[in-house]
Image 1 (cartoon, rainbow, N blue to C red):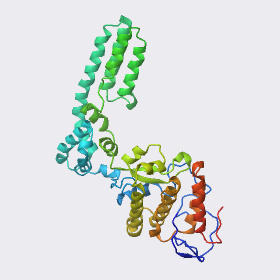
Image 2: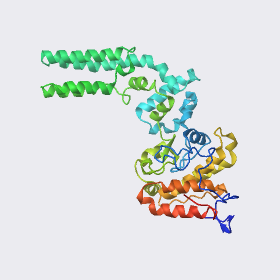
Image 3: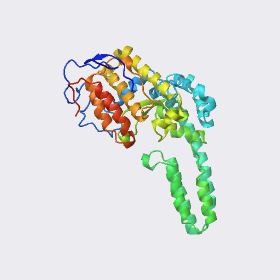
Image 4: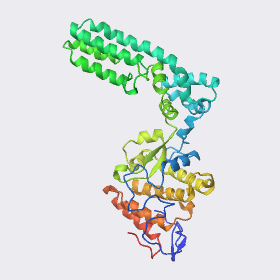
Length: 389
């Protein structure tokens, strides 16, 4: 842990702790923290000091991915008119699946005719015709099952045709409850159950094989349009090509007491899976450098953009967040990643105390040694009369 000199109590520290009066072991002010250290739920999805609306606002100022350093796009941008959002996907056409590329092309043709509509609304325009065409695709599969019913005993044949008839009702009747509308997976499960009751195993296998030919959004443009026309633009965009969009990732897993999250591009978030930060760092040699770039950007936002925040007390909250990121990565990497936050110049003593208590609550024994190093160093930053409970 780097400690740079700034005078305090005849000692020197990197953070210039503000300590005009002795600090009591009490909860932080309510304008800075939501709850006291005694009532914070450390298994919460997000640290309560840094709510999602604050983190989403941060990303709007532009942040590089801390792993690969690419500029991350806020998901909210996908709600803008399609003429703008489709530009996000243009550089990735060669990497997109054939179906997503086809959808991009269809939307690109339609967008100039409807310049105010977003990508969901464009799919909505295509939906009525796609729905009709999809019914023809589905009917072809069900007709195939009808032919198979002729090879079954009379009772079983009638049972299969009745099941096919109910499936047609679900497909055609759009006024019934959502839970009763046609669902491909649910339909397959019904026919699989029926096939298990068929004694002729060859016909049973044909039924199972045939029902699985029902079109999916991966192979049928019509199924794609019908499925995603009712989804929000963010969901559609992540389906088309997700790699450039910012997603929140726990630094230390939530199950181990981690509560601090960082924006990470969805590609690196997905690639990380369940591996540790230490292993992620080993797999990405430039990660420490890219993390520092990310931190430097946050410090620049703290120094220059904070008047533009809608979040109350944004400047102090952002300082806390940067400080928490630095400590969390130091612990999660077992001291391998030591970020320089000297640009912040000052960290309130109360924030340091909060961090010490938060770090102690991280419950992975593997971090015990580095937790001790981190808390000891943070304790040295406090005024001599201050105490930690």
